[in-house]
Image (tube, rainbow, N blue to C red; front, side, top):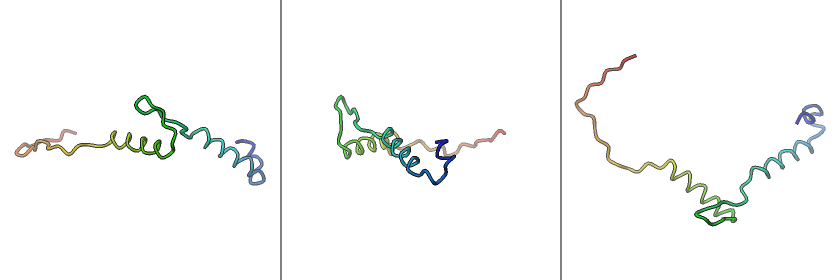
Length: 75
């Protein structure tokens, strides 16, 4: 990266190669789902989305109301 900073725009090929390599290293090629490996891009995407949806999903449950209570704020 310091090479790119030193040479500036004259070395755009180096900079783009660095970005391409970074993308290759950070991609998900396969995912282990319930003891089975998933390789299809669409299936990987769906499993990742479902995982995070389930992590942040909160079921709609009835919570008790706190009517008639007075709370004091202590600072």
